Length: 565
Image (cartoon, rainbow, N blue to C red; front, side, top):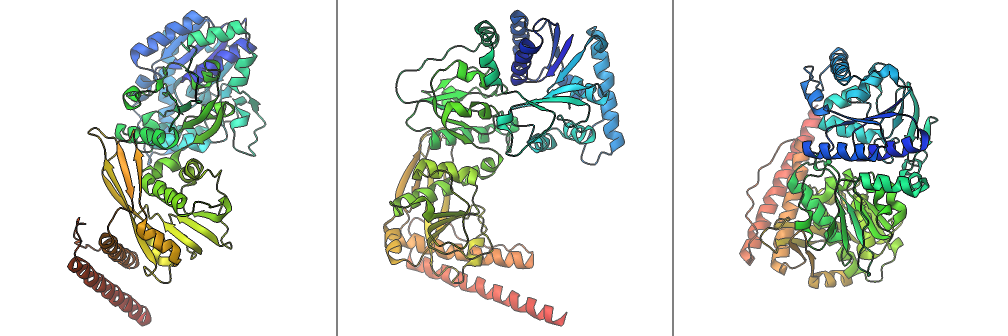
């Protein structure tokens, strides 16, 4: 008999193909965790699996119950003995479960696991029962660190077990590793790896077996009206996000669609564990697919090609890349910068308007999230992936966020300052002398908007008279329809720009002083007013003068102290 142990729809798909191809006549037991769907959803899944008759026996193991009943809680301070106690309790719990189900592992001749850090999969590992390992998702065999980081954040016990026993396919008792070779990181090699690309393997099945699997997952043919090719958005399970909140999840989803799915039909494929259920409300005209089938089956229910395939972390995108004209893979780097999306978008739109004939090799990008910047440059400027900046080359325009130590040279430099630390001014010899303030104003356009009212800025460093003249008249408006906001760039009056430029220099001076003294400085700055008078500007100049004097005093004191030492 053959044993399969997994915890996702992707695992079930892999096991189904493996069973049909390698063990068509042998009996097999499929054990899956109960955390794929809700309680009722798991019952329906079990029924569908039994009706398909690919596996002779299906058992749902109450993983959640087993994990949370373990009395040996693991924290960052737990020693190896504590982790071993946790593992031994899991062994006892699994043996009790096997006894209740009348399952004898001695009856099995082959063991396959896609989840060797939890419940039965962990039991095989800790008892040193050799098994074949299936990667958890496309490309993850070479990205073990991605899983480790997730477990470290979401469930530390799993992380501790992985490190203690070399789980996730790394233990020496693993005899073979099934993984999608084309999805691995460039240059990755593992002598135990065997290529297992489910889309290709599914194609190799006869039509009868293909139909059986599609019906088992309720994956029905998708027909769209003739017209533009659709954009496919693969969602992410909220818990997997860096900031796992519904508010963040909705902001990311609407923003992605606003930026990259304009003027094309939208297809949304929710992650199997995605419980939000609001996609049809957010995207009225979109086709929202059922979440009950793995995304790797999409090529077999829709015969057309996608204009774009976009995701914020779904590993399925690596199996679908041949089915889209463009693939936009957003991950942790994008999530960490998503709330700087307005500055990034404003900066790229600024470049398009100010430099209409710009060539790809005339733009430099430094200190920016390329996971965010590259798709924006493709969408707005039409440029493919921007190459790393050559510090020796002089560019027409440079977009800069987190500032390097070197002073940049270009006709025009846009500082995004997304961390609002004003460090960009540290490397400019003239300080704020040639800096031009360009406001970025975000305002809600509907009552239940996902986005919020915000105010940001980008700072343009240039001495070019033609660019300065254009800057004085510069204004663009950009709508984020699904996010429910409009962005206005450059709509501030001349007095407001001058006022905020002085405020920015004050904040930079304050930031420098805080960094030099390791002390927090509290400044009671007045709020931005709609109408700025000459007196308001005069007051801010006086405040700037005082702040600079205070900084110079501190620097002098620091120098004297160092001399005495």
